[in-house]
Length: 549
Image (cartoon, rainbow, N blue to C red; front, side, top):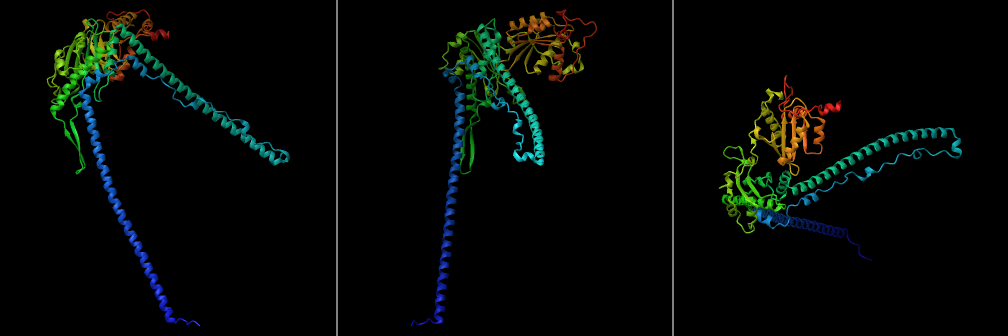
């Protein structure tokens, strides 16, 4: 028979078991603590490695940014240094046909679903099903069915009205979209027709077309960003000479920065300045290149050989640092003939030396805006131009236009068109050739020379005056003629002007333009006994009166 364990033995065994349990628990806790410590250290090592990697990537990004800035800077300098050579190496010359092809036709811009009418509500889908069998015999069901049917009819009628409103809006929106599309199509066709007309007129040697064509040549050539690419041109048919007043870029086009650098220790992107000597040298070379490039592009585009000579005046719009006022000095001026210029091999010349061969006058210090006298002032192309008088500023004290002298009235018209955005020149009274004001519309493609005639009349301006303006416009090589009067025009005048680049502004138009563009509320009241000077009085009434009659 097995010996029974004593109570004390059992207690000792229980104590040992409990001790072993505690030791096991302590070991598990220590293992957990060691695992947590290991995880913490692993995290800190990963974090340190991550920070180090992030810092490395950041430094590389800053270095890459500096490299990109320096590359961009170097590319700009190369463009400035190669303005002439890049044009000479380009095989693509000026092509009006390419401009025409670039004007894409409009496409419909409304969603296709706008063309699909919405199906009208169908009454049958609203009506409740008819009772069948025994259901038809129950009075309550008949009443409920009648109520449901009435409700269905009401809902159907409301939906029909809503559908009609939606359909009306759809049709209106579609009609508006189609109308706008048609207008864009007509505008597109008008642009193409204007280009076709320009091509034909240029080939025929019309002076206005010659000016417009060569203006396009200069406006469409590619220069680096920051170049103005603005020019005024005038053509002298007698001498077959084109005079160009061209806007040069300012000195600031040459960057002040010579190089970008990144300092990792201070985490800064710094710049090294370009020397004044280098900037001035680059700008002087730029002025010479732009001059030769412009002459080259104009002669190269003159396939019909309308030009025997070119005059180039390179101007720059800037601020005089001594006075703070806007100035427009001429930095280079040259006159050359086709034969002389085309005899040069521009691919091998030094631009500055080439200008000396052409007897050009070049600023001794373009960067400092030292001016030269143009060989031919742009305003001297037409000797009729005179200094205009500011009449608008004094008109408040003499609001009746009929009280102005003829010269003051012409100055008023000149002032007004200048405020409307045109570049104007008033002509001398004794030498105007039927022109009171010559204006230049600076808009590309559709701008050009505008001749303006002003007539301070009481009676209707006759059609002969309109015919004379049209003839003058053609003789001047202008793209548009404007006749302004304090009175009105007859039917024959408007019929003659129809389809021609002529604008007839009567007294009410003039008063409106003065109000809108000059803030002047003027009036037209001929004094007693007024006689129109050299007026071509028409027997017909003004056009508006004729229509009213």
